[in-house]
Image (cartoon, rainbow, N blue to C red; front, side):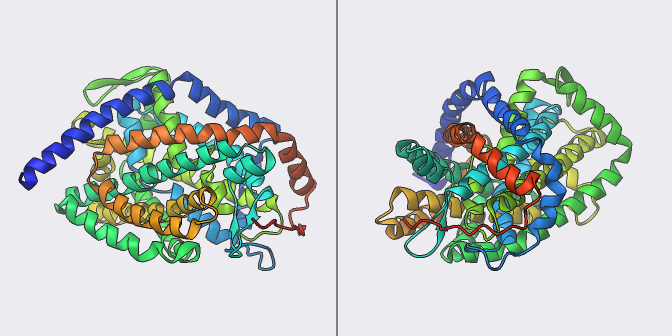
Length: 472
């Protein structure tokens, strides 16, 4: 069997698998899951008296360092590592996918999910910080699995959460990112996807064996750079497409509720726009999934509310700022260029938009997507390792080494997988992470209110909590 025949067989397998996974998602991401996710966001927003109003205070706190507090890394390092896991190709390819399939109106639902999700990101981070532990090697660990086991004695559900964290990590945190890099480099420079897969695998392998501190150091350098560079590119495109900005806003608003004709076909409508907007918003900012709570638990801070506020800013930056910029640029570019979205894969929508920037546009986007995707792979590496550590307490060191080997292999596989398949796998895993994560948020909501009242509403954010972190 030749290489070409093998590739055909692999593509047929992926195609059949995608049909099966898409069928599961059509059931999961119906009204029940959408209601659960948005209902959680709304419940916590009201219960915690709109924590979104403190977002700019939280941003200021994120750049301050609490040196004398318990933790492995600074709040800023934890935040950028968390952002590395969220600000990824989901902000570019994921938003474009939502717009192509769900219509421009999907952006409105994605934005709403982000704004309301700030409350959920705050709540899940706060409750995780309350139940974090110290491992025997001295490192700090936390997240929904420890909340489920320590606060609610639901150890089986904690293991289930860890399993779906791993699935989510391998799919959205790894496969999707490698796929975006390989498709972008192939379109921009004609690089074979197998060459990209090999080089990306080597790059990931060279970083992840240094643990959280090594990952955090890389993310501290990459995340601010890549976010600023991408936003500058979006601002340039908004000026280029200035005449189409208001028509874009009108189109987005109308198609959020009604089907509209774009690119030669009728797309959108309430259900499909809501489904893809909310699911892509979740996959982008991860509010409600608990992944950010795993990372932020290792950070130093004077008290848990202060750190939870810092954690909530990741949803603001990810969805309210970056995803919104992507969506408006994509829609305005579509109107300006007049290209048919149905004739392009969603992974190339922003490529065509950035081509409007003379000489450097396509090259800049290729570099940005690479850094977005690479940092996301690194950020999810830590989440996966913490899930493994919880599941294999006694043999966690060996299990983590094996996980890293599988993670490196998965990086190669993801780079050659079809785009829609990896997004569908990620959507399925995300849905199954939501349920065990949000249960404690409802059950322990009074504790959330108590801590929030003491530190935030009564203005004690500078108070130092002298906590005794239990060892496990």
